[in-house]
Length: 632
Image: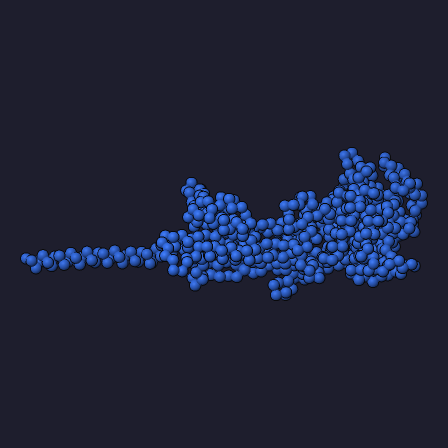
């Protein structure tokens, strides 16, 4: 009997052990096989991190390699309040001098806080951004101070709980990699370059990169930005990466570097002269463009007032507007080049043909047209351009007819974007032919009933300088990678031939007369170069008609006239001290042209009878001479 009982007991023990081992085996299979991926994912939530690796944004340089925009590495310093164990005020005292922030402000930021999810569940906030764009050297000093403060002194016994707290305190302050966009020349070429937004952080600390917001920074944001990389890795209890357990590591691809057609020194010259024009004539704004007429390369583009992209908060929105492409207005007399060029091209007129300019008053379709400067009698076509006769241009328009005038307006590029690589360019206003009135054929030839941008107007003038060929304006010369290998090279782009080379040569002859003593712009004449150009004085449109005391004044010209190297446009909005284009805009053209010729080493094509000063002297004295130039 005792033997049977003992046997039963052994069987029971064996059964229980078997059941226990079976349960253990099932549990192991469940953990290691059936729920392996699920449990691994849960574990990874605590120890695995995925990092987005931000690429370096490409530089922007001028045509000579001068740096216009670059990115410097910085640190974005953050805190994990849950690791501070109530010592946020103590930590704030350490951080304040490095971050140049108020202790109380820092302490308040680092106080423990929670946020509610969509289900109303409270979760501790474990990422608080303290300061962005901290210099790397400053972060290294701050990090060293924290480690030093909370290190465990050798030979000193510290409670285990305090050791854990110190570990947390050393890991509580972290820094993510960032970039800070810098424009070393401040306001120079600001409207060309534009600016970028600031990177933002999600509550979890992920970086959201803000793209370019204006200018080339926006237009070429993709190539400049490069491609992100990523890293999947393990972190320890102090949130430090365990490099040995790094699973994926894909390096970012740096952004491409952009080389512009802009010449920084010439840009500086233009902005200096516009600043002087603002001082002398106190206009609402002033703008200028310097361009190579045969290739469309923009060497300088500026608007005053402007802004410093390093200090956007100090600028006004209207100062950030690129008036060269965004502002449209009636061009006034500069538009006479369109009707005369078209008429010459069609053989409707010759330069020697004459028109009666009615001594300044011409009645047509119920409206009386007037000429400035007391009016003129009989003028040749060349003199109509030289003296800028409204009546003469209108009569040429009448002879040409509505349809052909409209065709040439469109052919010269008006009513459509030029294609400059800048966002925000306006097309201007060209009314459909069916909407023209009986007087439109007299108004449009003298630059009314139409609205254009300064860039459209200068591109039309470039077409005349370029044997009648309209070209696309270019701001980008090439894109290069981090190894300086050319990825993209821009080439000149001809759009269409608007007028024949012969008609263009005839127009140049007429435009050269504009800067003669009998023309409207003798103040645009250069000592060493022949100049072809046209003045513009446009009354501002107001309710019910035109203002009699508010004008846009402009001058567009190129030189050397018979072999053009540079075309320059100057526009002043409501200048004082002489509102005619020949009085205010032409002298600005002259000083820019003199200094540009010296900088670009353009070969002179004329020798003045009396040599008054060297080109070098002209270059250095130009800003002061512009200020002393008397008005007509």
